[in-house]
Length: 302
Ligand code: SF4
Ligand code: SF4
Image (cartoon, rainbow, N blue to C red):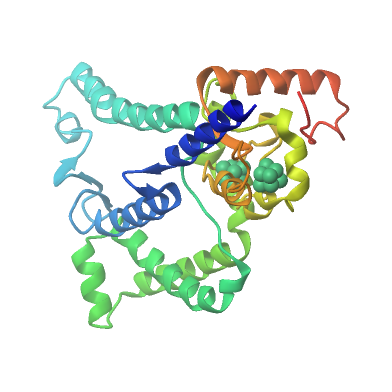
């Protein structure tokens, strides 16, 4: 008995350790990654990593002009076959590669992005939201016009009429979206998220939050901490088919770690992959067959 308790405690320790990487907790890595992506979003146009230049009428990728190369075709210096090949190689294939990468990531790991905020932070959130909405509007414009022109005009206080209209409308739209609609947008309006979730649902072995149903009675001492921290307002103990909008943030797993810190068996929520993920999916199917809709959201002993 003592031996099995010790083994369980070691397993719990290992599980807890697995939720850090290079000594940093997963949530801190998540914040660093989000910050890195945001900085990349802001600086990509400035350093010509990726932007669409409306003045030139084509994309710029890593400093090179990304065109379909059809000018020669219009000037009758290129055959129809060569023009078709250009469209496939320079247009269709890169777009298919980007879409394929996005779907593969979703199929294997689900929606690996997004987050939410705490109501306590509203006083700080409001001015920050306005500032970030304006920053987003400016950055989006640098994806469409030369960044030097956009930032130069702004620094001199001389944006053109169209630039001023764009910045005003886009800032207001981002502000409303960040303040009132982001949660709804993430769940129902984001096309990228929707397709990643569909791909994830189609893969029974995809990474998913698994719940130790045989230990469900341990939840009695906890006030649904996992439900309260979920940014997508999900019940993380639910079956996978009810977790369509999960963004794999791991906050429910961390909350359970915290509430079960003194439990020798450790957390009830864990990331599961491959075969264990498949058994979660099998539970989905059984639950769908055997439980009435009102009960299927309550995951209990399997
Ligand atoms: S269920 Fe867990 S991992 Fe998924 S969004 Fe909610 S808190 Fe994040
Ligand atoms: S946080 Fe853990 S113990 Fe608490 S309700 Fe969720 S699964 Fe149960």
